[in-house]
Length: 247
Ligand code: NAD
Image (cartoon, rainbow, N blue to C red; front, side, top):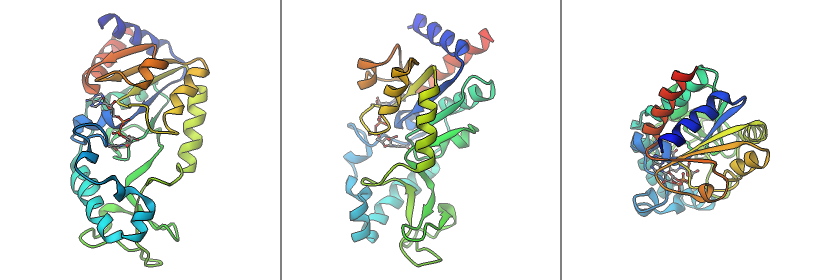
């Protein structure tokens, strides 16, 4: 393990265009559970609340659950040492960007600048009809939020099942995955597409893959060069210490 950690540090300090690819696992230590798995949110809630058709048919019921999960609960979460370590790597010039599948805004809160939110962000609400956006913190979520321009029901500005990837994040993520020579995957099972095809693309273009997770994933079995088993915050702290000793 220590050997693998050293190898990962060497890859990072010698890389020309390192990027990170993050999933729900990086935010677990901030108190946000993943969707799937035994303790995942879908073991408690019906995932249908994030189905676009269901949302339009029954917005009142959908908003009740969405508010509870994404605003009452997610709203309290703070960036953890793994988010902070990535932000510091960017400041040190050792990380070009982060592609995140997360919608919790924690990379920005940690201070990272170049973050591509592949699935959108929960901190904004958007009108599905006229595209007006407002900050979720400025909306009255005790009732279903309505657009102040066209009075349609607002939805969170992250993608629901059945929606496409936001255009700019899609373009930036594919460009970065094409360019990178080192991708650090943190806390992602690799089961959600098209996001999961980004690490595959990086690998096809010759990038090295360092993966951090509590358990082996679809990536570990196929494309990972160095697997670092453990909690994201602990491993990222160790990597950062190693990096600082070498630069
Ligand atoms: P996922 O692919 O994001 O998998 C979560 C992974 O994190 C698992 O492989 C698990 O072993 C790993 N993990 C858990 N705790 C960890 C820790 N402390 N350190 C390192 N790794 C850890 O799967 P999902 O949860 O089903 O997510 C589906 C989609 O929904 C993804 O796009 C995900 O990013 C998104 N989602 C986002 C949030 C968020 O914004 N925080 C929360 C839930 C889901």
